[in-house]
Length: 144
Image: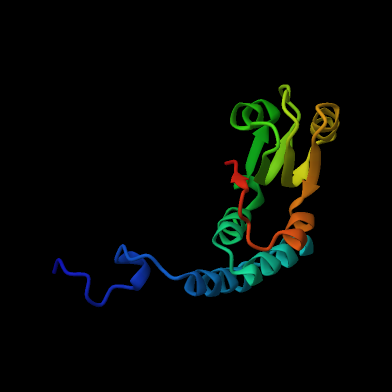
């Protein structure tokens, strides 16, 4: 049998709507038993925005912590231009230099990363802080 009849919608190669993605994310949050209350609260907050950008960030954050992204400042420096706002759904690490003045938003930062970002004239924000200000997620770059 080679048709797609009877298969779940997500396996048929069809794009799901934003509302369906939000519902799927909320189910995923309920199914997983997060030990960190901060991540659970953040995921619910991101799902409520109903923004494609923030839902993509939430999908990356809902993975186990050992599989989350760890990004060095050298990688951020390669992708950034002055004035950009970059979102890292994981931890920003302090290896490398930062030459442009950027705003880096992440779930966690190492102490050396925060110091380097501030020395470059940039800003280090937690994801929770930016979601409060910008619910649409427009003009943001996702760094994975």
